[in-house]
Length: 271
Length: 288
Image (cartoon, rainbow over all chains, first blue to last red; front, side):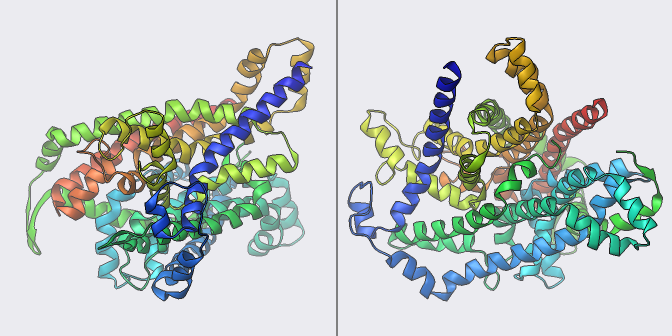
């Protein structure tokens, strides 16, 4: 009896928390379906004159929707680069002891701790001097600063969970290292790779400071374009809200796909 | 895991090393270079030694900003860690309800940081925001753009909203890893709810909590975009944290030498605190 009551109050607690969590997001959604006149004329809990106009603005203006394409492009590039270099490195850290391994690992992690603001100006100068300013690849490379260390850290945790015996058996069966790695090892840690990809997506998608500094027109992320809604006649709240709602959707899709692994991934495979 | 000594493993690490050297070491060296010079223009720079560093450490504006930053990070940790543990304890153990909880909790984490600022701007304004309007209706004189205390609390509330789910998800995954037998043993011993938490759940959460504290410390210490969008650092400089002070100095005023010296001090502080956490993690791994 006491247990049932406790579990009911638990359910109530978590429901209340999630409702509080979603209220600000609901408010954004609510705004995005209102006309600016309705927004400014008074507070309404749901749209009185339901309108899709704000979304139409975004989907018909190429300077708006190209922002989403730009963001997606550098996020996917960053994901590819990060996973390609982080997989072998994580394997090395999880399987071998080598000269300076602990120092190297901490040095890598220390890059995750570097405030992006510190690297703002040098990055700008570096990428300008090699002619990569305002390209997707510049942002993708800059985001490696914090994504590569994180990816190595998460993957190392997952790989350490696979017993060494698998590796040795594969060698006895005559597998070469690259073939073993791609054909046997990677499928075994696929949930780990999925979670890592999720984290890379997340941190690259939400970052603005570096992405904005390294781009001007051609590769500008959606987040930077959103600042345009502040015009001479004040802020265009409706369009701003609609743009905000559209930045949330990709994340929700990604988390749906990895929902079963995400909790374990948040603990970086170290549970 | 038993690890084999083999220095050829360096070849596997080499790509990461080259990439990170390019994206971190080169910029860092640039910063170091600036921090010891006074630059008037291209080819017109003078070596000034540690002058910028002394300058920065004495700068009262920076000291105030550093103090605010530590206050903010401490408040963030003090609220989010216990709250996150509480949420994790309340979450359903499995099934479709647990999946739903996970997805809903993860949503704030996946919103671009400037949009987080925008959401709270829209939510907390007195005229169009539910939160601001509601507080004013209840008789509170709430105005986050005018009152420093309100601004500070709003930024803090925004961070709690944004990042508590991360702590909750981490703790949830830690809790799921506790074998059922532990709880059965506790039941046989007629352990109280508190005893179960204190002697079974908390020790098992130690590892994930260190990760949660580490990530939350690092990220709250580097916070920039959200308060920038929400309050712009104001009113006055009440919500101007370190990153914003630094960005203004480097990009706004183009004060390269001072900004570089400040960057290094900033980085060293984060590094020092994180090193303490890292040592704690590896130490615990050894104990296990």
